[in-house]
Amino acid sequence: MKLSAEIRNQKALEAQLGKLAGGDLCKAYALALNDTGFMVRGKQVAALNGAFDRVTPFVGRSPKVFKATPDKLAVSIAPTLHTDRSAFVRGGKVGVDPQDVLQAQAEGGRRRDKRSEVILRRAGILPNGMQTSIPKTPYPGSDDGRGNLRGPFLVQLISYLQAFGEQGYRANMTARRKRNLQRGTAKQVGRRYFVSYGRLRGHHLAAGIWAASGTHGVDVRPVVMFVRAGTYRPRIDMDRVARDAGVQEYLDKRVRFRVREAAGV
Image: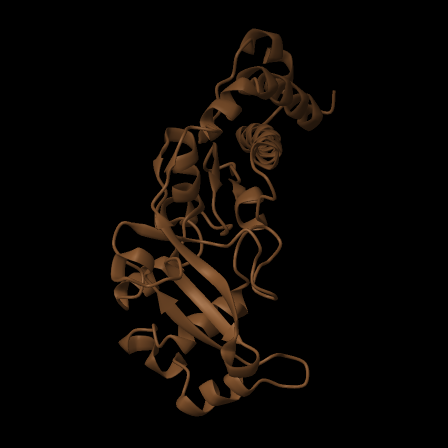
């Protein structure tokens, strides 16, 4: 969302405006716009954290304010991890864009693949038309408490399955590292990962990535499940949140305040 300066009730400000040079006036406008931008961001963050269960900081804190300046009287609010203006177009961290995550929640439809799903699909592990999901009881040490796999655990899993492509082949786990993981340590039980495709290929375990540990691998637990790509119903519209925040009225008040502040009245 972008906001630009629209000054209403200008006659009521003429006395104050007459005392300000052009540069000072533009500074006052820019400050008022930024005040409004941060107000909108606060409303959006509150709406995000209220709409989702255990929302991740990646999404919950993604709305960012790209400030107005005296030379550019427009403020932008966009979901991204970056704080520079180019991110308003580019989006968030590499491989994942908060704008894409929220678009499915606003418009409904299929969730876009996560970066890990793209990697697993390219490696031929994740079947077409399916996405990943954490089991109801997460594998020990695998989840971040918000329904997602921990980054280091996910890297280990992809590395073990040799799923990193040509550019990342060195990140794939060597045979020696695999043996060490399977052997375990005093603090971590040994385990091996394997893929099941369920009834798709006559396997008795549900489709997903599993871990086998214990004596002779008798303790078998799901790590990641392969599920049919889900369809979201519309849940939150960030632009509507901004519209409902009374942007123009708030901007009017902040313009009057900032102009009077600059004029010293």
